[in-house]
Length: 228
Image 1 (cartoon, rainbow, N blue to C red):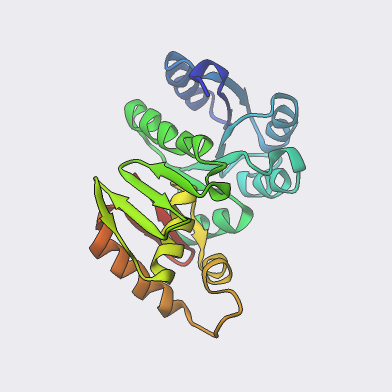
Image 2 (cartoon, rainbow, N blue to C red):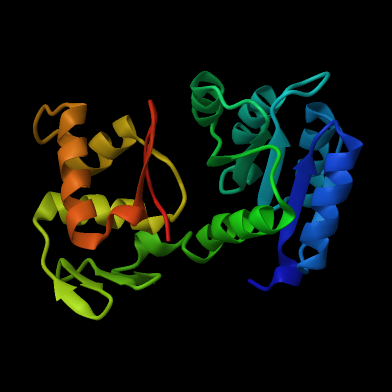
């Protein structure tokens, strides 16, 4: 998808934030729409059907977390990427955001160049949204071959144990998406055996050793995500 066809909705009650962020994203070639609170944001989202929504957490009338919950219950917003823009760094607000259905968060204040880079990283998911249905797909320098249970990392072929492969396959299917621990257990281990969260940690540690530590980020109290 070309930048000019990518729609981004920015929802924030601070006029300066709306102006600065929308200017920088528009300068990159994206279609940018704005709203000043959660209620207006939901209305604008239903009309414009954005690919990415950036929500401030603290807003009048309806805060970002409430708005996110409403959006996630809206069928046409099911695959929309939602990220919080917040000055609050406490773990509880981040966890509450992920529980509401957010994909990531950006902490204010943020430099325009950093914001643009973050948005580009989030939008890479659009290119990978059908990856879960593909037998062979590539993310960055990593190619996953589900048919043969093979991984090619920087041109080097690797054969991983089954659960490590399935975990890597799940995380790379949507780069930058946070997968909750329970979702990982259900998708990778299913009902095969009763396992605990520690099992995931061990497999992540092994993948970090084999693929690269920088690719696997722990989101405290929530789960894991794969980053490029």
